[in-house]
Length: 307
Image 1 (cartoon, rainbow, N blue to C red):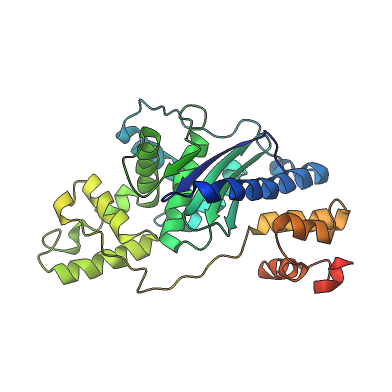
Image 2: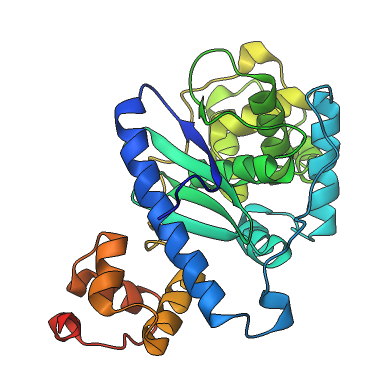
């Protein structure tokens, strides 16, 4: 486990203080396990080694919202995220920043976190949130990792209600611009003779379809349109969304990278099957299922691994 090491910044909704401490301890155990296994195994290739000086953005709390938008636009181009950045963002974070992205079973009200520790940077995402929320949280937590030194995030920030702190406002601006490229949105301007059109039903269906295309929520898309001067605040309808129209898959726990490292540790004898299961809070059978979820052969067969 992590003792006095590393720093978390959590994105929460509501009062979760009674659950956050215990969950942070569990998350710290998962990350400590990965760190220790990676240190024991060593990088297979030079490019697998963790960065000692991660990529950062030259933003501060004095930076304007426009600065955050520009930073997102630059990063999207630098990482070649394309017209639907959400589809490529996770891979880019893993490859460009050598950062773990873990999908976890978090308590209700905890949607994600950024984590910093020498040798291991990570983003945790509640895998039970719906797709658009997971994507926005991923982009939001990326901002915190990129600005950790110059805009230190709070240990826990409420992402849903109340006045937002300056770091959270900048993070939201960054995430919005990263996931919804200005050039893509402006290309939609000619979809209607008047924008927005007078037919509100047609407009609602169109908004939901475009939000689905970008893998973002419809309210988030509307506020991005406001940001770009293509809508007025009074026209925003926060009740719209496509989540009830399209079902999306829940990602399996943790990540393929994490599970492959666990397999290496088991093969090397660095950790035993019962130890690994206990550290992850799983049964032996659950651990076998975790390997299967990523199409990785488990080095044991269900309960046989307990011996």
